[in-house]
Image (cartoon, rainbow, N blue to C red):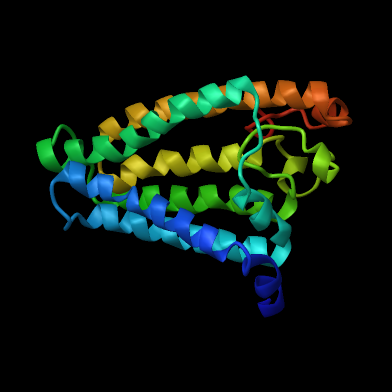
Amino acid sequence: MAETVRAYAAEPTWKLALRGIVRTSLFAVLFISAGRIGWTRAWILFGLMLLTVAANLIVILRSNPRLLRERLKKDEASKSFDRVFMAVAIPVSLAILIVPGLDAVRFGWSSLPLGWLYVGAALHLLGDVPMAWAMATNPYLERTVRIQDDRGHTVITSGPYRMVRHPMYVGLLVMMAGWPLILGSVWTYVPVALLGILVVLRTAFEDRTLREELPGYAEYARRTRHRLLPGVW
């Protein structure tokens, strides 16, 4: 384990740290929108985020260390639909951080009993399972949609990809479903639902790209018929 960390993580450590600092700082938006730092539910979500990020990093370093280096590289040119997705998804994601503080703390538009926090935490942790499994299995798991000819891109059919074609998105959708419950904000489901719709649309465009451009993917899609819900869709 130590040798793997030194071999694959030493070079991009500063990039990983910088990205972590930037993403972590975004959680300040939760407390700014709430108007106070002493918001226990927001701290619980923050702790769960740190826990799953740390767990995923360990999974990558143990099972798929090259993925860390590839995901830290500058994004290559992506498809036009991917650029549109990112342009819309970023403000929607910010709304997910802004709405709960306004709703559950500052103005009290809605509230959820404490018991829902445990359900939300369970969804968050459950959602990370297919995400971590995909990270351990797929060496081509970049942030943007492109055919990685420079890396000998092939179809991955093992692990969670035996059940659905997009397990990372499955995990993200389940995880997002838990966030409003953790934060105690019903209205947060509005931006969460919008982001969920964007994610589902992205899977459709990504699937079409892979069918058209990645050899073997069309045959894989015929065998693994479900895109997101095993046995359903």
